[in-house]
Length: 351
Image 1 (cartoon, helix red, strand yellow):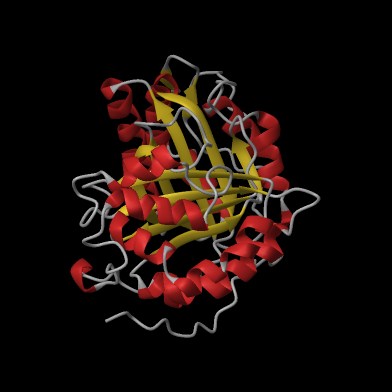
Image 2: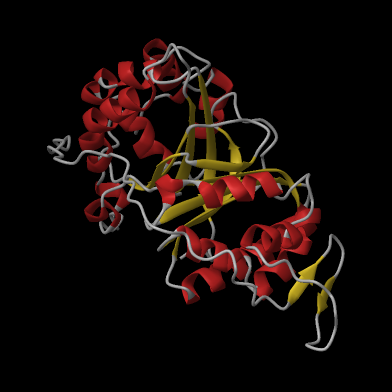
């Protein structure tokens, strides 16, 4: 029997409240980092430690290729929309090989330890399996992490934590084209508090289970034209061909770039409101939805980033064939002039 979607009375909107980001005069850090070494400064030396937060950040993260620039750090510090409000941070990056992945993992572990110690929490650590759309390119085998902090100041404290600064040296050699975003999480707390369903088999799947996969792909392509905001035929075939398509949880990283002739945030909010009852009935749980306040890194600009955990690819595909969900698609397609998607697999150590 099909699950009947329930009504959702929640509006996903941005929150911005004003307050101070803290004093730039704080300069208690005792670590100086250059691209290759980390040196502990003795109290009697004359080595200069920057007296501003921006200066300390620029000194700790000096590599223009993979670290935020001094200007990017300053823009983050100056952003009044992030004053005295919780912020979410998302980073995804490519990695060259297993050695690079191990180095990046060590950095993420250091960030997570410091984050939890300072009252933050991690929403996801996942491995990129493949792109789900035509963009972004080159992140197969990379990694994604997302965390929430009580404030921007706490995030700054974490990235200046000596252990994180030390681990950042290995990150520099490990990552390719990192994208780093910061914004206010729009997912209501009551949704964040909902546990993922334990019984995947009980979730809707009858629109997919037992059917020829070629027929399922053809039906999807008849509903969602290939390319742009939707997967191509080879991408759909690859997803449905996974041996664990019935059981493996996946986290989708959805990326939207708004343009002057698109519906922007208003259209994607309309899509969220119309689609969310069906999404939740299929066992999905949104983890992070941010309008990007600051993008500190990345070769491509994105305006909204969404992380949603799905119980399985099969259940997600069932959703995409559900009539009520299909009806919600118009506003999603109209929202943006560029779309990206990464299909990622939960890491064993992500909880």
